[in-house]
Length: 444
Picture 1 (cartoon, rainbow, N blue to C red):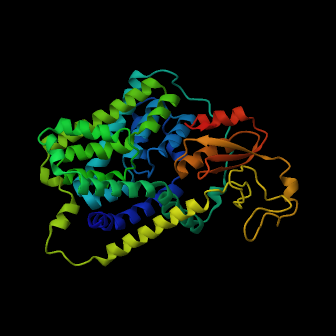
Picture 2 (cartoon, rainbow, N blue to C red):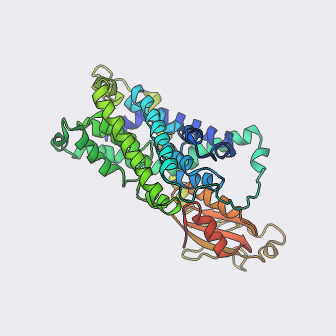
Picture 3 (tube, rainbow, N blue to C red):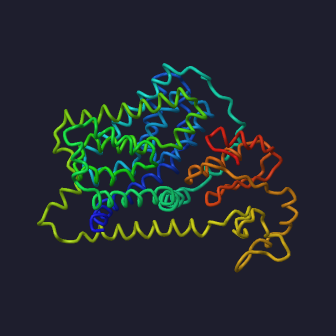
């Protein structure tokens, strides 16, 4: 527990800063900027896609619908794969957190590796996968201008909400899991186990790849695991493989890419990630001084003269813990929410809204009957669909936007807690299914 708390204290100030910057980027940078320059099947579009993706705070599940949306809007296959590789490997939040635990060299090398690997992968797809290329036919889009009409204060508040509520819900669980795994490795795995890999860089990298590729890891959650592996004797190159390959892919993303972009693209995608991580990991181990890559966490804990408590870091850790607790509480509170009116009055095991019944099922004060003509407005019912594959708020928003873009859809609400979508309108189930599956999800 002491080592886990030390990790948290070291990371928390940088995590809070990284989340804040990520929120600003999410709100103030328009999405159209990313799709505008990615249509060409050339080196320029691949490079721009990588540069766009590197600072974005998207995890390996959230990047899938975003990339599929770019593809629908006209991005080439190469640019889409470049975005898929670069985005989950880093992010403004994870780069800052990397600096906090692994030092400046790792923080600099990590985005460089992501850039080179994604450019290589995107151009590889452009060269060898010419199936179904061209600009895909996008679904008719409904132009939503309300985001452009918000004031600066409203946007700033939205950025804070995204950073410290939405992102906490998406990344917080995996960050906690990463810290717990790091603690378990440190305490329970004997040093003699990793002695098997001593002096054998390629064997240690193969071992880490076998762990990293099938696992779901976010870019931030992979950092404490990489630190724990280095403390047990694995090389910095093997740690880099964990940092890059772990967040870049997992079983779910592999299956979605195979389904949406094709088997050949999926194979080229995996080749790019594995070869990039191994080549740069080998370069770190054999070409760069080992002392550059001593974790700053180790340096501070080895300094026996530094015994005083850094109350600023402790305060940041407490604030981070409270935000994580708040995000978890909100998710549990909305676990059964799925009512189209937003009142959360679903009965357990029931997908129908009862807010217009004679006896409303809402607990406490009910606001469902305040507006005149509410029942008349509900003449066109909400149809409830189960959506498979949503893991974060980015997934939820992507599904919601994809369905809302359909003609004959008047209103749509997607709920991550129940994996359901409530759709009001006359759009057919096949149209909704096609919209959902086009960005990598399934309609049950």
